[in-house]
Each structure stands twice: as structure tokens, then as C-alpha cells.
Length: 533
Image (cartoon, rainbow, N blue to C red; front, side, top):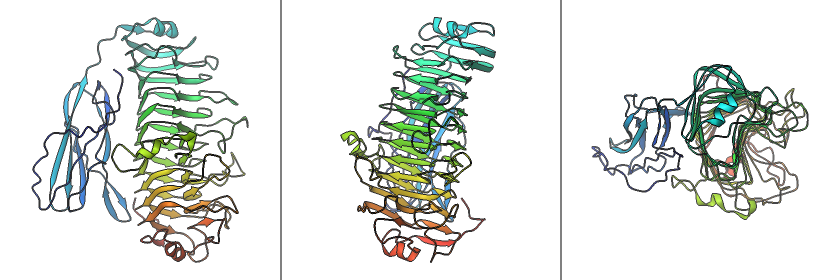
């Protein structure tokens, strides 16, 4: 069945008696992904809406109800273990499970909320595809709701598969489906509006347009490999989901695709759980540039995205990029390393984009933020120059925010590359100049010089960066607090805190950075190779 975003209705089972002293927390357990599905079925659970009573929360424990050990994860931030209120899990067997979130506080209060997760067994297959069969014809001849087994082997497509509602396609052994470099698309969700489609365990390779293409519909892809799709000089690659309804990517591997690994938006919601996204945007024709045109992963106008536990590395463009009026975007527990462009990038996500004030509504968790980038590890992103583009990237940062608002950047571990965190007005763009309602707190940030020093050089900077000389705009409700900067250079002389070429605030020392209110409770210390993260 189609997946539906499940919002907090405010109705939950009775809590466990608190058992401690003082006022206990108020727990909110939200499952953005579907609570019903076919095995294997993966679920994201979050407790972001939970509020403390009169004492600090010390842990969030997720018990998945299937005998899996309770998850009680923390992230070390400057020597302090910070509890993590989001996790995901795969149910491998059919059954009815009670998912619970138990929140503990320092006074010994324990409060629990639960959800019921219903997982059914995959029905017996009704269609079998064997090596030597015409895989395109076999898939297109299958009925609505067909359970399609593809036996191990290598298959060459003769055209596109047009999925029908509730079809399940699964690999029985190692299955490779190739476009041979001439067939454009493997799965084309075109005019049928197919929903509830599930594809499991396939390697999909060498399609010349988009391996997976949507102008409607919804689908789940599990344990799939999508690689070497698209051709030089075209906007093409692994997945185009701009007009989809819901797309789930569960433990998939997208690599070595052309201008995009994955692109989506215009109403589509994406749940991306685990998996690896690497060596995408490998177009060497010179017709497209990850500097200005495309990114490895680009979403536009999405109503909600959850990216949890993803490993994105060694891509030639921006690793994770949202551009234009997105809302309810969570990027949590991801590892983003050695990408030529920005690690995580928000561009023109504000009320000025198209006149649509989408992201002013705040997140599903009631935080008021439309973007939450939390508990991620980012290293070596945003190179000033590489052998691929020796002139350097015009947006070099591990975390980059341009003309956007309502963003929380917290509990991240950031190291290397060019800027650690950069904010930019992009005054050359017509959509507006706002940088507002941005909270940067409790991050551990290593500051290294990876290029020539000097204002605007793109060398190991962190903080507010305005790259347009002679312009000045005020920040609105932009705060840096309790961040920890690990400096490899002399604080007094190296410009690793602020570059603002429109005013005299250039080459600030850390003392000036704090005096200007940019991080009043932050701290700096010498770079430590044993620094925990």
C-alpha cells in the first residue's frame, strides 16, 4: 500500500509511571514512515517533540519490540555524551510489534510511549523471470499486485518497465539488470500513477537516462544498487523523483552515476535510511559543473525529507543539497566525507522563493525549524581545489546555508575541507537576501587551512561568510552558541571565525568573534588528534 506521512495526532497510550522525583518529561513518539508494511519493513522513529519536565533528559531508548536490544545511543560532543532522539530499524519477519520510546531524566523519571508496527509476510510469487527471458516484457505483462521473483543472472532490458500498483519485484540471488548503455530507464513511473511498488535486491546499471524515473507514484527500494547510469553532457543519473509521491530508499547503494545520484522534489517526500552514495556526478564532458549546475543529491520543493544514517562520500558535486522552498527536512546520523562540493547545503529555502512561505511552518516536531541537521559527522567536504576542478569550488563548506531560514545545526562533528560552517546571502540572486532564524549550537568543529590564507580564500573558515564585497545585510535571529572550535593555527592572526567583506568584520580573532555575539559561550582549543567524536 502507499506510504503516508504520519503526523503527530496528540493521541498516545498512557505513560509508564515516572518513578523519579519532580516533573517527568512529556514524551512524543513519532513514526514518519509507515507503521504497516511487508517484511522486511523499515521504520524511522523519533522523539524530537519530547519536552523535559524540570530536569534534563539523559537518554532516549527505542525498543523495537522484536527482541532487538534497546537502542540508547549517544554522541560525544566535546567530552559530553548527548542523547540521540532518532533511530531507524528493519523488521525482518512478519508479526505485530510494539515499538516503544522510553525517556529518562536526571531525576530518575522514566516515561514511555508506544506505537504498534504491523508487518506481513511477502505473498508467494506469482511471476518468475529466468535468465534468457525478456525481462522488460515479463515485467510489463505482470498484473497489478503481482509478486515477481527474478532468479539470479544478468538481464539486458529492451525498454522501460512501467510499474503497476502494489507490485513487488525481488531478486532470488544476485540479479543485474542492464540498460546496455542504450535503454534510457529501467523503471518509469509515468502515467500509470503506480503506488505501493517495492523493488528488492536488484543491481540496476548502465541506463542512459534515469535508472528510476517518476512523474507520479510511490515506491520502496530496498538493498538495491544503482550505478553507472546517465551519459556525459545530460542531466541524468540514478533516480529522478521530482513528481513522485513518496520514495523510500532503504539500504541502497547509488554510485558512479552522472549529473545526479538522486534528485527529487515538487511535492515528493523521501525517506532515506542507511545506504551509501558515492562517486556520483562523474560527468567529465565539461558541459555540466558541480560548481554551479548540479549536485549529487538535490531536492527542490519537498514537503518532508528524512535522511538518516546515510554514508555520502567522494562525490564530485554537493553531497546533500536542498534548493528552494523545502520544509520538514531532517538530516541525522549521517557520515558525509570527502565530497568536492558542500557536505550539506541549503539554498534559497525561504519565503522569498517563488513567493511560497512553505518553510515558515516549522517542523513536525514543533521545534519551529524547517531544517534540522543533527548528530552528523562531516569531514573533508568543500575542497577549495581538486584535480577534477583545480580552480576550486565557489561554495566550499562542510555545512553551507545560503538565503535560507529556520535551520538548526547542532551536535555535529566537523573536520577539514574548506569552511566548517558558512552562511552566505547570495546577493546576486533575485529571490531575496535573508539569513534568519538559524541556530548553530553544540557542534565540535576542527579548523584547518587547506588553501591560501587571506579574506575570501576559502581556507578553513567557520561562521558567517559573505562572499560579495561591498554589500551588507543584517542577520536576523542567527545565533552561534556553545560550539567548540579546535584550531590548528594562531587564533590571533588566522581568519578562522568570520569573513564579512561588506564591513570591517574581517579576520576576526576568537575574542572579537565572541565580543560581536557570534558565539558568546563557545570555546577554542588546540587541535587534538585524540579528540573524541
